[in-house]
Length: 212
Image (cartoon, rainbow, N blue to C red; front, side, top):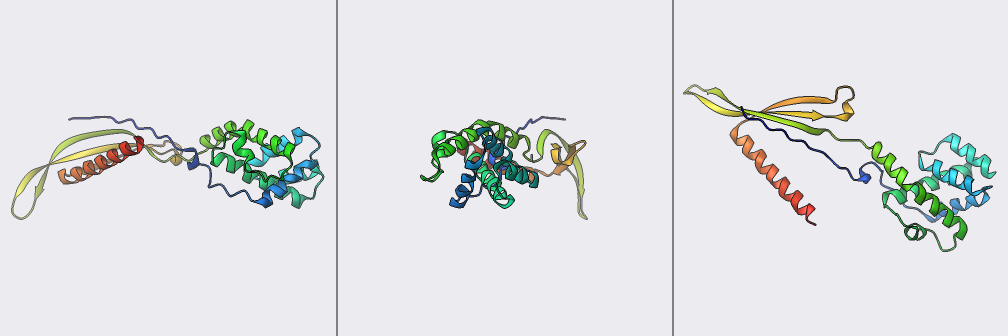
């Protein structure tokens, strides 16, 4: 019996978790001007940070009370902040210049700088949260194989045919509980040749991508 073990790990790009960011429109920036009604910079910072997560009725009500604005306007503000922060995260805008460039020239200067500062201060935390909540695909943890001789027969003859038994150990985090399971596959020489040819093509393609 011959055996080998393969340890594979996967590194997912942040965008595999963060949904495609919506475009930030002029209407969103009009809504952001409502932050000028905030009683303090800390109030602006709190609304910006809280809005990054899924907007909620409670956040809308709190924002409306803090800024002394109607609930409908508060809901629009929270949604616009949510869109902006996810846009910054999705496109990995990591410098003040990149974020400031999103704002219209007529946007209030001090408020624009404050929002940009808050987004930069929290980007690292939001990225970590996004990676921590990403959905992982099943991963190959181990591979074991052996060659057996099986008897093949038909109406004319009987003969021994070599076959390969491959056991795959799969870790599927989405399964819950005991996420590791094993699957055994029987492969003929022809099937194995086909798989090896395909894996070779995948290896070559990965080498090309890595070399770019």
